[in-house]
Image (tube, rainbow, N blue to C red):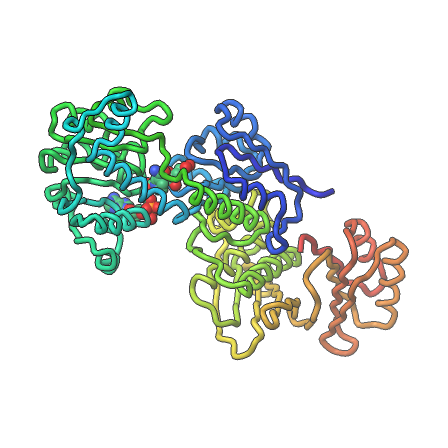
Length: 540
Ligand SMILES: NC(=O)c1ccc[n+]([C@@H]2O[C@H](COP(=O)([O-])OP(=O)(O)OC[C@H]3O[C@@H](n4cnc5c(N)ncnc54)[C@H](O)[C@@H]3O)[C@@H](O)[C@H]2O)c1
Ligand SMILES: O=C(O)CC[C@@H](O)C(=O)O
């Protein structure tokens, strides 16, 4: 029966996301049928109920994906954050549970940077106050006198996607741009014409406007507190369109009340959707309800990207924007995609053909890959092996952790390939000297994958459907007996390959069959004359 995947969407998404999920382009088509439950702005108790049988959660900032929610989510395999910040997702727990977390970095950058500049202009020119007064019939050209941006200094904390775009816009207003970001290279400062400040203190001492653009995490929570605010010059301005909590709200209120800081413009708050009332009502503060990403353009890009990430994840491919995928950044090429699927299949095959206690898994790769791509093959092989050998849900996310927990070692080796043929050899070693199996595979032209060997026996057979792996003495009549036995049991053979080490010695056969195969049918095979073993290898 076709599996149904439930996708729960708890934040408002652009229609493009639903369109892509409902009408999947052929290159992203998934084999499961999708049940989409779209409940933006649903109350928490409904979300907690719905999450129980959800496979994929797509959320925005209003949904806290915390331990309470994750623990109820018995079937969850993907959390897709339709935005950048994932501070409201318990990524450690998600990783532990094998749940992939993805986001959409860069897709709302321009919108967030434009809003930051909009807030700054609105604040220094008192635009909201002037609008309210004028639209109510007033005409006061003195009260709404402001200050220029030109020649003022903006201090940017976090020169990432949004920060460096704010730097660019501020330059357009003839501002002096200084920035503090200890995690990026000198080059990024130079490229964005931002003067580098080595400490936050140096930055605070020199800026008229302080704008934060860092993620919210343990290090940045409260990084602008009373002490830091007091290190700014008197008369400064604060902007926060990043995350509530980076600037301590009570401290900000205190310096605003003192008149030490003369204005603040805020889009993101500690307690959304019910921010600190005294702060949002302060006459020198202008506020917006976390709308940095709320533009048609950003939401289109986010909707499109998040739907693609979800479909890729459901197809078992490596996604473009993983948050918690160890060491893997981008799945570069289609060839690598095919190669990683092959790596997973070969190890899943290997996991089904030995009878000893495994100790070491080894993957030998003959190809010309960079380090990241090799890591993709490694994770695929671990995932393939464990998903057969483990009751746990295994994904690219938790594969290495589970392997460690099982006390298995993994070795990987690469030798260069000089042809259009890439090769894989997956080996499982036990503790005893004779405890070893190997499965080899070849990928021709990045497209055509074949199983090429099992131990010393050579083959050329596709790795799909269920396969019977059979060992027998090389005697006349074995193939005939097997063929009639399978026919009697209504099993249709799609491909039959025999390999033998020497005439009259040992032979190994691979039988690719159409449809599913009952294990009792395989058990019956073992009773035929001259058969040594017969195993069913499935899940390929
Ligand atoms: N208001 C909105 O709707 C909205 C929209 C987009 C982004 N955001 C928020 O804006 C922030 C920045 O987003 P981004 O896309 O630019 O992220 P980013 O990851 O591209 O940039 C963050 C930068 O902060 C730097 N950084 C991290 N810790 C730091 C620290 N302790 N001190 C100084 N610098 C530090 C990083 O090196 C990085 O360069 C995030 O909090 C994001 O959630 C808000
Ligand atoms: O719109 C959202 O859900 C949050 C947008 C923004 O804060 C982000 O983190 O990208």
